[in-house]
Image (cartoon, rainbow, N blue to C red; front, side, top):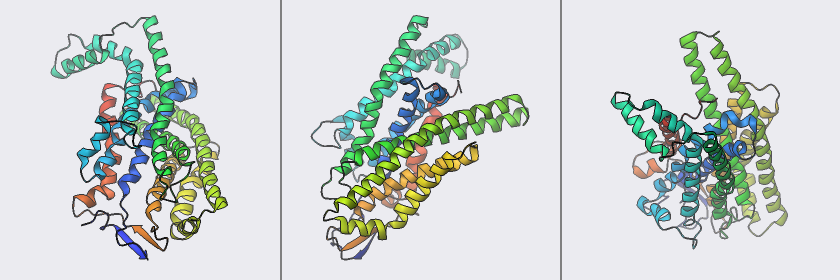
Length: 410
């Protein structure tokens, strides 16, 4: 069976060999790389630019970006009919193709993130190694050896050594910002440089991808932070009662961090919306030959997905919710979910929408997302395949957080 036949619905005149080849996993690919880049940029705002109001969430977003990192490749692996060939971009990186350059950028970014986390947590590793030395029990011995290995033999915790660590964090975070932007900007570059596709070809595409990536990364970090803090409050209430001071303190820290971080989210959201609208106006103003079919896709076939779901629910409503003074946790949760949904719909409309019209310019194709899988392909390219990708970073974060507690200072 031809790849794409199971989920492609055709309308009017379409070439017989045309299908929706790139499914939800290719939507997830730029979405996940964007979350990686956005989470790192959020942490760098504190480490590089000294934004003290982000101190409470900076460490958390740095560790969370590490948990998100392995899942950047995951959608490609799940989409490929021969998954092991996807590893070639990592083992044979070169600049002769845009996707092969991913191996270089991804490896560089991974080394920066790992190095920065090591500098941030080196003193913690040393302290844990000293504290666990000589303790009995298999778990303690295992932890001792793990933390000792993580110190890499650097046990100096003098003021001078800590100052060097902080300087290293600042330098790595400064280098990491352009690399993180490039990591995701190149995904936009791949789409924007496809001359054969009228919807994708745009010089603004890389910039749009970068800005929406920062928006989605910040939103996911904030949402995950709220979930963790609410869980901490719930456990504190069960143990000490609703009126205990520790419960009130956790609630105060949570709303303070979220309120301050939401200002940065709002700024990046304004920039992302402006760029997307500018791109739309540019296409209409230049009115190239392909504009007729693009206009049909945007203002007729995919009108609901683009203007109602993406711009309406994903941009306008959260923008208003973030602007309203005196934010509450419930309102912020709704706004953050809608922001993440809006960025996802932007990716969906680019990837799926770009394949929605036939190259004959006389017909359309629709992607019928497989909900209940009946074979391996409909699992990978359907709802459950996407959910697998979404859940994975949270499982990884749970494991990583056991070694490097990201919310200890929050």
